[in-house]
Image (cartoon, rainbow, N blue to C red; front, side):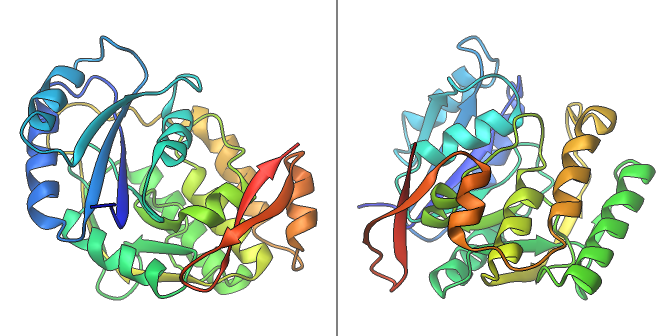
Length: 263
């Protein structure tokens, strides 16, 4: 059965900790799904454990990222390798709630191009994590929601679902860190395409060590934070930013148009 949702999980030496993540995800996701474990190196310690699960559950695939190292490239590669019309990006550290993957995917099925799991809307919560990172993320979410009207109070959260055709149309320019979630939210906002959110409870990483480097990733976040403000862009003008041309490919069965990038 063709999956309705592709779950993209970028990993970096998670080792046996990936087993707990996959066990919860495979139990909670009820839609026809594939889970792509995207790794940068053949000898990543996550791979043997993920392949052990894949031998008994065909929903799991390990895929080697060939776009370059780092989470942004892993997410880009995973989305390009996805077979479903909806992609969900989630982390391997257990911070995100896999029970919400189906709900996020169904919002995209209903027509939004970005569905965000929001820590900062009523009913959401963030438990733990570095204090400075929390303050910056909350401030960015509130100001973007209030003044840029991006449709979510948590534009920086990586836990989001996307219309795969939308992502392939607008492209991903980020090459460094986890700012892809903010980039795609900002692009949807400038195109005036629908963005929605549901509340989530984010729990700080229970096992292992976080690989988030605020100093390294902050410039990318700032770039897309300011890009979110501005007048409406046409698809052609947005495509020109990436040196690509949006070309209609085939009708989407949900009623929108799917595009491919050329140039």
